Image (cartoon, rainbow, N blue to C red; front, side, top):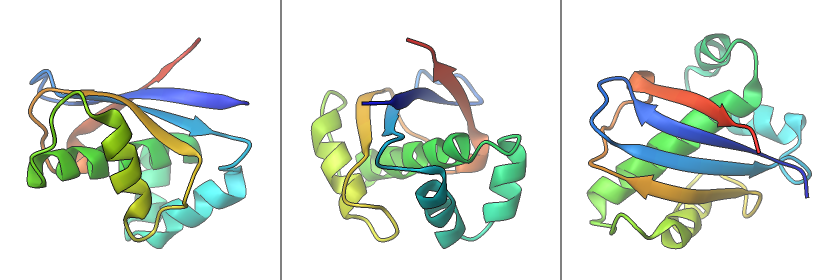
Length: 120
């Protein structure tokens, strides 16, 4: 399995973090562009990711998971449940993206999130 892992954090350093693993054999660049393009602001988001569609998708997935954690009172150590919830949301494929970690109190706006790829 080929994958890329990203740590998502907010720009205000409130200890909110989320890790997202994208299986690039399932989420091809074409699929990643479809995910990014489903949501408004796709061109801007891709531009802010320096053209890396996986960074744009990781930011979207991280923001969505953090909102889900806030709105549904998820416990911080429940990445499996958040993965399932994310993939059941409109606009997301049924597989290929996994939340591997989440901690802290989430903020809502993806524009305030920072993305760092984790090299393994």
